[in-house]
Amino acid sequence: MNRKLASLIGVSLCIIGASAVGADLAKEGKYDQNECFVGAHHMIMHSKDAMGGSYTVNGVSPVASGLFHNTTSVCNGTWTLVNGEYNEMGSCEYTDPAGDKIFGLFNRKNQESGSFRAVGGTGKYNGIAVASNWMPVTDAPPPAGQIAVCTREWGSWKLR
Image (tube, rainbow, N blue to C red; front, side, top):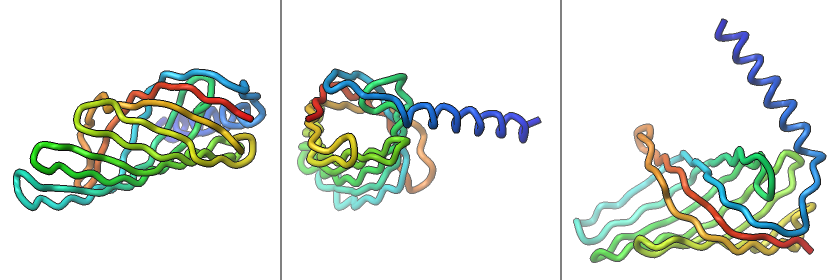
């Protein structure tokens, strides 16, 4: 029974992915979505007042439509917490079902929302401009040595 269910889910995902490949994207728009990430996390705990870490996570955006419809992502980031001041920065690459990609940079300070901006795109995303914000909304129980988190992301995009 589990094998049949897995096959049905796999076929459904292939059909959904194939239909998304031909979907047209508006030339501009807004989005507000959640995305979840999981991946390797490395940390240095120098003291209670000085620590830092780095991570590589993979994410999925199963949103119904819009810019990040059915995309996957890989993000590399680094963070520090020194004397109560938190800083985080990194980069992400999003890939859609057609293989077109968006590359962007993110940062966040303390408990404020972070920012994300696209600095490159391939295929239909060539010349894209993205201005957005993000904020962690939940920490999931991670596997050992990894991080698991979901973020809320909201903003706008414009294609050339």
